[in-house]
Image 1 (cartoon, rainbow, N blue to C red):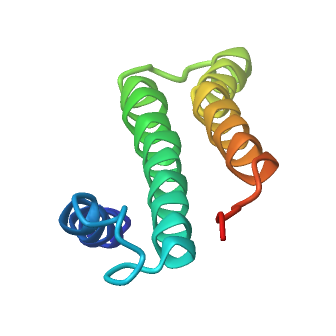
Image 2 (cartoon, rainbow, N blue to C red):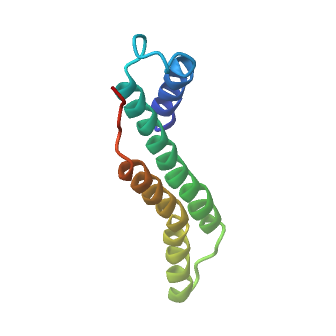
Image 3 (cartoon, helix red, strand yellow):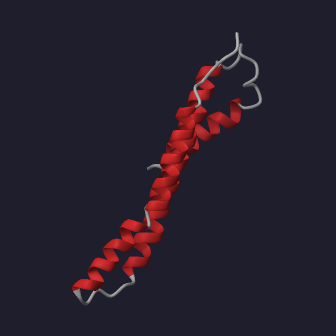
Length: 104
């Protein structure tokens, strides 16, 4: 579900990349917006798909016998998303911190 928009937008960016320098063919603001959105979707994919694969997959094999083991598995699931969420927030901060400017 999350990969289909990413694939479509990445294809759009790849098709218009060679002609992006010509403002008559591709609007620079639209191209920059679509490129930023593609990067945001990529970081979102890495965040949640990585968290699900590493966190939920590894916690599935743990045998929860005591309450202490249940807590450790819950922490393992939650902590697996931390690097991805950090990358997602950092990417969005860097993308939003640099405004889109076009030269006249």
